[in-house]
Image (tube, rainbow, N blue to C red; front, side):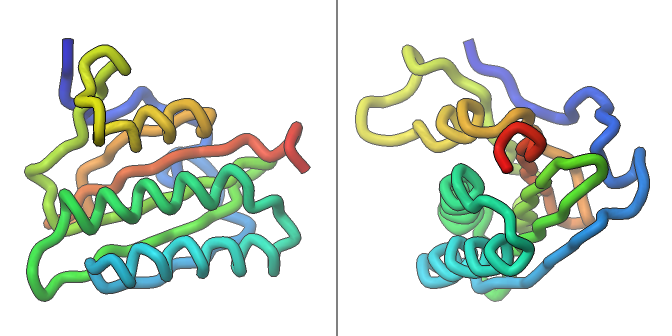
Length: 152
């Protein structure tokens, strides 16, 4: 059974619910394969500069950026990658694309075609939490959070 994700339950680490991030990086990227690759490379370099582990964040960024390019692309519009470290020790990864009407669908491994569709299952396994939020208008933002406390 599939269902659309419209909003996750509130979390203490959502930017609107808590203090400002201790560290923040945000960049617009072209909605192309090159932009998706650049998102992964920039994320790794930013995490290195913050002296944070880049695994599994690198894979999560790669999947979310690839989905933004494949499913969220609007000609002439960019997608945005944002990384933020939220207190006490959470890395939040956000990818906003211009297709707010195309929400990801949560599926199980049984429901997915053999050759594609495993990206969000991978994100679900690697992240401690993930979901989708409306906005900023006219976009949607797919986010994932990784608790850093046990990983540092």
